[in-house]
Image 1: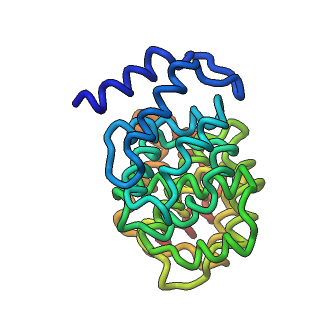
Image 2: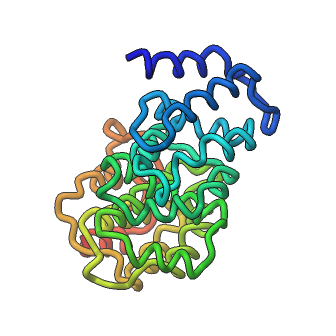
Length: 275
């Protein structure tokens, strides 16, 4: 489809690979973006504008003016009936900068309340972005956060715990530090204590988070148990793999957790009895 290939090729050829924040887009690319977006008039679904929307985060960083004037209107739910298409495209990249979030904040929060309007994978990424913003951007007021949390489904909570688990595994400073600095304070402040919101997905993720925390495993396990966030997850084979000390069968993510039974046998037995 030329309507898709042409703008994609424009970005590939004209967007500098090492574009600087605030440095501005090349003049011809900026002009083309304006023509593409204006041609759609934001009243019908336009494939070319979808490609532009998928590049929104980069444009927001490199050329905030073009983003605000030309691209941001694509994402406004109140004035664009096709906003869902552009949000889905934006979520393809699974990345958002603090500046982009600040520009899209109200419509981003509105999107969280529209799971049926977005593609399932797109909504999952949106929930993960929300948690990233919460944990590392500190860009949402406490009352707003409570309102968002109160409107999420069980499925969305599973998306959040899955992302927490990923952040622990990938933390450069160590999972236990990330837990203490970001996750524990946020969970303590915002995570619902409603037993009806506990699912196999969230309980499995929390149990895995505890074993990822290495030497802090006993304290994290006790903390999660006290908050009532753990429970029976009999099909959680990944947990058994994480605790298995068979050196021939250990994934790199489980190098530390495979030693927990030797270091903290009582707490490993406690975890296994819970799950």
